[in-house]
Structure formats: structure tokens, C-alpha cells
Amino acid sequence: MTTTYHDPVMLKECIDALGIVENGVYVDVTFGGGGHSREILRRLGPKGKLIAFDQDEDAQRNRISDPRFVLVRHNYRYIRQFLRYYDVLPVNGLLADLGISSYQIDEASKGFSIRFNAPLDMRMNRQGSLTAARVLNEYPERELVRVFSDYGEVRNAKSLVRLILEMRMEKKIEEIEDFKQRISSVADRQHESNYYAKVFQALRIEVNDELGALKELLIRSAEVVAPGGKLVVMAYHSLEDRLVKNFIARGKFEGETEKDLFGNAIQVPFRALTKKPLEAGEEEINRNPRARSAKLRIAERI
Image (tube, rainbow, N blue to C red; front, top):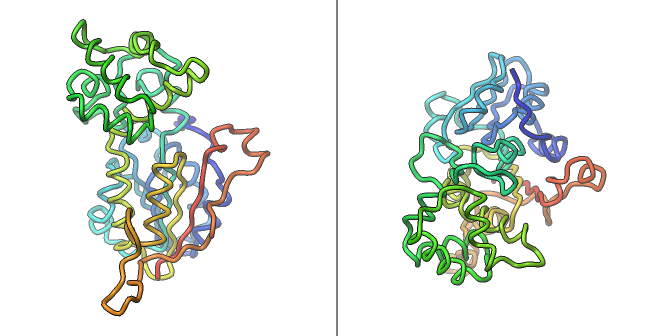
């Protein structure tokens, strides 16, 4: 049974970028509904191999019955351990379609969306112990300010946090609708939905350690992708895209390119194949509005 997660954004561009070798080995670290994986398998030869990752138990329903395919129910930050376990190192290409799927947004019980009332959960992996409610009710003031400033780029993060501290002294913060109503006094009246979206994005990133996992994935990608192999990453917000851009350009996430004693730039593991990120065309955006914010970066292992 296949659960409709979402239409894969820039499907052709992503798979073309991988430059599929007939009997190569590829990794789809964000399996979801399996749209990208199915297209990779369609282009692979009989001796090819595809390893996919997804920590969301619901994604297991979309498992593909194909001897060339393996689905790993773990976070992609553990990519090196599992590729070693399956004895498929090095690989010819790695694809990451970051963020959350339309299915995850539309599934009210997961607590990702501002459109539904549900418990403030936001765990991609239900086996994890940290929820959005725990963040809101237990984090100290400084940590809450960090979460909303760094991960949501919420301009009035300090005012929001002061209100949250007052709220939780009165009663626990547990459900989406109640939380939205109680913070409405500090929300941007002209862009209220966008304000809530930023607040929820910040909570989701913290609960799932999304940026920490992405950094680990990028570092490990240099260890698992063979020379000439491709790194294909699609991001949906500036925080993710900045990490990907800096890693490809400098081999690190912050600061200037490192140089040796003679002032020469130390070789980075990947070479960018696109000066600017690819973006979805107007026709695709009209069909799938989620594609509007997608930025696709492609690099080759040196």
C-alpha cells in the first residue's frame, strides 16, 4: 500500500543530477512516499542497488518490493554505519530532499501543521522522547530564545518567550490551537500565519535536531560518495540551504575557506556543478505550491 506523501519536487532534475550509472549504488536519504526512489530504480540496471532512509514509521508503508532496494528506518545521520553494514561503500550518488513531506504536514496527529488542533508533538521519529510540548514547558528562557531566533528567525523572540514563560506558569502548553490563541497577542497581525509558521518551524527543527543531522549527513557524504559521484540536495528554507551551500563551497559550515601554510586553499571534498541553486519552474509551482521555496544544489565528489 502506498501512502500519498507529496509530489516529489523537481523529480526529473534531481534524478538527472545523480547521473545514474546502470549498475551503480545510490542512496535516497529522505524516502517518504518513495517518488524519487522509484525513479532511481527505474533507471538502475539489474545489478544496481538503492539504499533509502526514513525514520518516520509511516514511510514504511511505502516500502518498494524490489531486490535492489533496502529501506532503513533510521535517521540519515547514521548513513556511514548502515552503508558499511550493507557493504555498499562507496556509493555513486546521494540524494536528500530535506524538510517535511506534505503527508507529514497534512497528518494532524503529528502536530506539524498550524491548520489542525492536535497535541504539540512534532516528532518525526515517535520513539524519540523530546516533543514540542516539552520544549515549550521545560526549556529555560535562554534556550527558548535560541530556538526561536536561530531556527525560526522570529524577530520578537524575546517577547514571545516572555509570554511563553507566563503561559506555562498558569497551565501546561499542550495543544496547537490553545498555543496559537495564547501567543496571538505577540504575533504579527499583518502576517499572522507566516508568524505561526516560523514559530512551528523552529520547534520542529529543535525537536528533530534537523540542522545537526544535516551537518552530520554532509560531513559523512564526503566519506561515502566515490570520486566522481554526485551529491544532490534540495532545501526548503535558508537555514538548510546555507549549510549546504557553505559545505560544498568550503568543506565547512561557517567562516572562510581554510588555507595551508603557503596561503593556498585546502582542497574541499566536493565541486559545485551549479553556480546558483536550481529552482522549480512556474508550471510545477502552479501544480505544487510547495515547490516555490525549493533550492536544488548539485556537487561532484573530487
